[in-house]
Amino acid sequence: MEDMEKFLFKFKGYYFNRSSLDIGFIENLDNFEIRENDVFIVTYPKSGTIWFQQLSLIYSEEHRKGTGKRETMDRVPFFEYKTPEMDFEERPSPCLFSTHLPYYLVPSGLKNKKVKIIYVYRNPKDVMCSYFHFAKNVISQFTGTFEEFMKQFLEGRVMGSLWFDHIKGWYEHRSLFNIQFMMYEEMKKDPRGSVLKICKFLEKGLSDEDMDAVVRQAIFENMKDDPLANYDSIIATVFGPNAKGHFLRKGTIGDWKNHLTVEQNERFDKIFQREMKDFPLEFIWDMNED
Ligand SMILES: Nc1ncnc2c1ncn2[C@@H]1O[C@H](COP(=O)(O)OS(=O)(=O)O)[C@@H](OP(=O)(O)O)[C@H]1O
Image 1: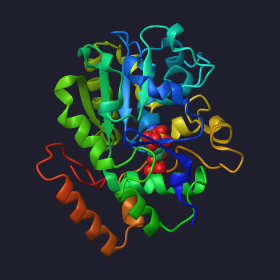
Image 2 (image 1 turned 60 degrees about the vertical axis):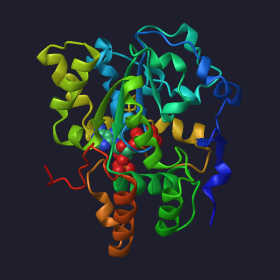
Image 3 (image 1 turned 180 degrees about the horizontal axis):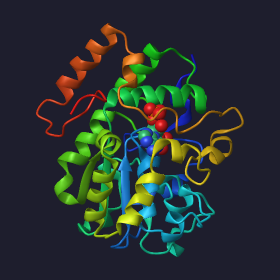
Image 4 (image 1 turned 135 degrees about the vertical axis):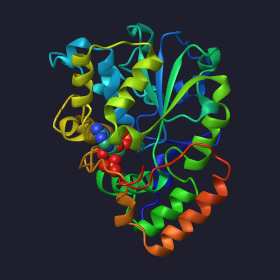
């Protein structure tokens, strides 16, 4: 089995993807100069990052109208995976970033309580399944079985480290930040309600027509067909010639039921209950659940 760990870089207890990582930048994250109107979308991998990046449409009239030409990754760069061509100093304001960083590695300027942070979370069984397909079939960094991946995921030996630590760390330290928690499943069930909630948090009013355009362009099928939004163009360049497949795979709630055996599910539940005891945010595990 190909062990994913060789593709990872550990810094202060947190696993980054090694390829395309500027280690000098990572070592100086704390000092990165934050502007008050920057917006950060924070996620654990496979929790809907690209989906919420698409909500940068809220800020871009030309992309809402379909005349804009910039890809999402250019409009909402991945903060910690900054490439030499990206000059964050020259970025227009407001600048949107996305990041998988844990709360303790983000620039200290984010703690000014002005910068808006949207933390997107998704039920971790679906996260794990999405991650398994991505690691195995898209970026070819994992060659083992689902059981082997589950073990690695539950030990936090994946990019993003341990899911439980990520969400609990951000939630328990929320009072340091100006942060809005958003749920993947709520966005799926009620996209308009979620977009409205985000607009409110961002203090950005949109007309009904603009709201319709954002909601429409954030629907899975529309994003999958949109080369500016689906990330297909970076798969080979970032992850190498063997990488194939799509970031937008299924986009559903409850795909874990097609992957976990009864025993695996019980084992997962036991760990979840132990780790998330007293954690107040709710999770949705099934499309039919309220
Ligand atoms: N519009 C829309 N609607 C519903 N679901 C969507 C959408 N866009 C992306 N996705 C799903 O999000 C999963 C990928 O997560 P991330 O974007 O966080 O991946 S990454 O961390 O940036 O690699 C991945 O989930 P799975 O399909 O379960 O693998 C994507 O399909």
